[in-house]
Length: 213
Image (cartoon, rainbow, N blue to C red; front, side, top):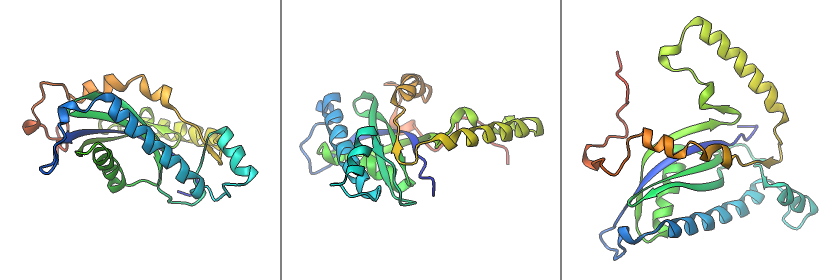
């Protein structure tokens, strides 16, 4: 938390028409969602300067803005640095959010806020963390991979990652949108959220692998 590392999340949501609204979910376009996300991202970036503990009228603030988005200097500060729309096919959509200091409630409210700005409701149906600071999903061990040899290799890999993380800019956050977007469609299809999926039969909390207790 003291390092204010940024985390990357893949969040899948679904739009729902509230009972007291005349908005038709089927008429909400990709362009409308992108406009909402762009406005939200602009508001979050403005707030990031406050959490960076710098005077907005100072030359330091200008230099930070020139280099990128200022990193939070207050440990635990909840900031969203970027939001991107990965996939949309009404009523489902998927975004990638880069943030720090977040928790489960904040991320769910982020999806709800998108729906509110569209004049409707939206719910989170899947949440996946793709990066934790310099650590990515490729650096993790699955349960079936846990053995002494793999654990030792993983420790060595983590030490290398931590050493390289010393070069991370402590003042500015760099976005990794190009790296994230390459597998967006592939990941979404892997979840099985195609048009043929029936929501009544879909259970986001059910693991895709058997568990033995």
